[in-house]
Length: 183
Image (cartoon, rainbow, N blue to C red; front, side, top):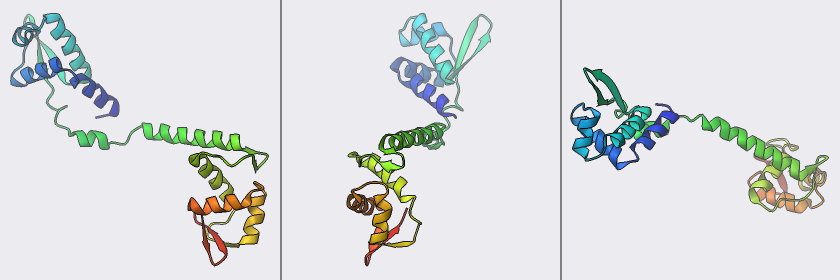
């Protein structure tokens, strides 16, 4: 079941009258007038709800002489909710694209000519900027403090804050006066 189908199904089930219709159809197949009489609803109301349930795939119809008989699609209700929720979403790809666009907007806002204009106040934006600066450092290579300061100074005059924030964000590790890029 796709995410879109699951969404339609859950919307279709989000009504007391529709649940009563499904309970009745679980007992036996019925036509609109019989459902209306049984549930004390108007035939128009029952038809409206049956249309919603058919769109959701919960109910199917067939012609039998003069009547349109409705029956429940038991296969739809065989799958577990956890299976539906566990399926990979097409939204994951869109979410990654949104994250990449957001990251690029942050970098465009805070970097000018390869230098950091200002250290962002928001932690998420600061992390993005620090990760970008860290790309100038080799992964796993220990840097003496003086050499690291020179690299950071190319990005912003407050290299001490950059260095301290990179350590607190887990981008750098400090051991015995040497700094190593972790991420």
